[in-house]
Image 1 (tube, protein in one colour):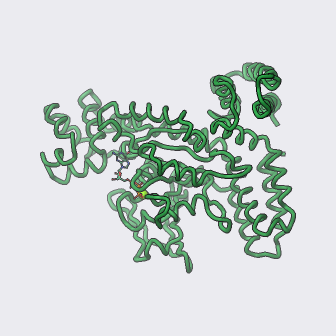
Image 2: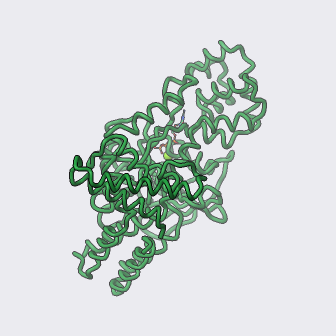
Image 3: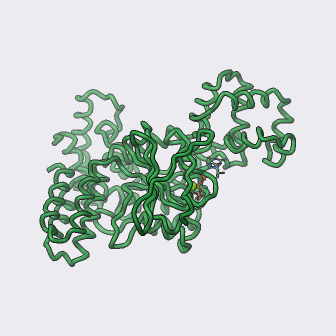
Length: 479
Ligand SMILES: Nc1nc2c(ncn2[C@@H]2O[C@H](COP(=O)(O)OP(=O)(O)OP(=O)(O)O)[C@@H](O)[C@H]2O)c(=O)[nH]1
Ligand SMILES: [Mg+2]
């Protein structure tokens, strides 16, 4: 049976089994509704990692406040909606609508005097194409695992037994690999059957333009670091992929204004050595002319962005659109969007099914499986090949199952590690003809049947090969 049908069915069975417990029943109905909602992706990371800026870049508008203020300490949901609306859900008492105020293109959220600790969440409805398939959730920065705000974020991402996890997937931002990041990722890494992989996490090296002291090749350096992290054993088991992004460049590029282009063009006319010298630090840049306009340029572009944009203008970019497109292209936003599509978008149903099963599993465990649903959950988890693929991907990445290098690489690809569609799994171009896909799948099947019999492999590796065989069979005979 198709996984999402099986999950729906078990939720209905549970609903019948728990009909005499209104709170549990409501919770289960909520899980059913959630299956049809957009995927929920939380953006997490340390304080000032650039979470809200990246969220704005993904949405294409300044909806998330980026400066200090009470609202950056509150979990805030951004959903697609017909008209802008902000609702505050306090920990105690009923929800309250907040005024929608935009200043200078940016949404301003004022909690109206409610302290952040008393707020459970803010929900912002916003009409935006990019929010149709995905609801984005901005979370407060984590300073250390133990302070209050961090606890709120950890609890949100990996809640205790009473409250189910609210996010289907996590984008974890870090400025560079730090022990605290690894600990944090470790802290919310799932345990147990369906959870044995960090299938739902993508790591981002954020504020990537600041790497390499603002030199114009900063983004290359950042991408090289991302590539290195991707194969770092400590990270491989914790996330699906690592991408370098300069959220500020992306956001400013997507929202560039004519007046900003004019100001940059004016800077580009200065003698190059003079401009380069003043762009060595914010202080120097503002010392030359501390007017509001330079300050505003630094806020919107950062020093790297100013250097990049002026150099683009000098090299012949004569329109705001040309500069804007280039800033976005260099920011790494496109690659992040592609990775999100492959890791989250294409796995939407699986991630949703997983969230629902985890929530149901919590309900069932909380009364010691008094209504006998545990076996049914187990059956779905064990029976769905999609979960077997995910478990194996995680096991390969964390080194729990070892296969020789190139063999492991092919296994990861066939299991959907770099894309879910059959051509991507087989290493073929996206638009490969069906016969080619079929032939490649058949070859892979034969090869992996052989691997499964390889006497050099231990039991775990042989089991892993059988999962890959099953994947090849699935490609050959789609359900
Ligand atoms: N140079 C540069 N600065 C950035 C980038 N992203 C964010 N910043 C700056 O970093 C500061 C913090 O950015 P935010 O987006 O508010 O970061 P945050 O992680 O949401 O911060 P908190 O919610 O307070 O934890 C702001 O001054 C941003 O302008 C980036 O890609 N490059
Ligand atoms: Mg923030």
